[in-house]
Image 1 (tube, rainbow, N blue to C red):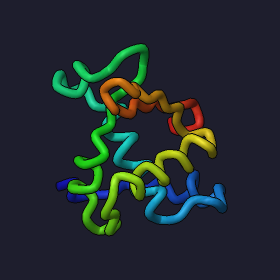
Image 2 (image 1 turned 180 degrees about the horizontal axis):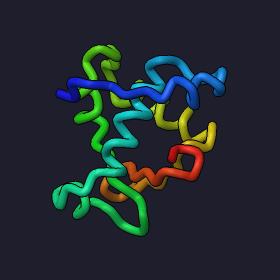
Image 3 (image 1 turned 90 degrees about the horizontal axis):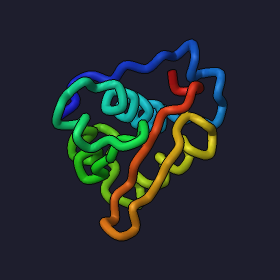
Image 4 (image 1 turned 30 degrees about the vertical axis):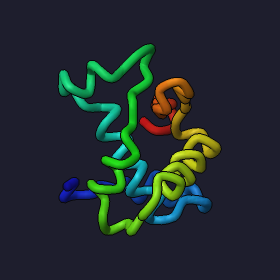
Length: 104
């Protein structure tokens, strides 16, 4: 479980479309994309990192996200707002994300 959530309130509060749950998922994605773990590094290509949505749901119980589609909606919102880029491997049903300059 991800025990701590770090939200840059000064930066993210300027975006009026973000909820607290969106910001918590933002932190989760920021942590994964910035991880130097070899295990996570092996799941990257061209700057994109694979995101296991089941893992996100398990790691973030306080958000009360129950379904893959619930997690996917938040990620889609972050992409729409320009914080991340997404790619989908439809063959293997995997979602990859890449942080944009706005996320940094």
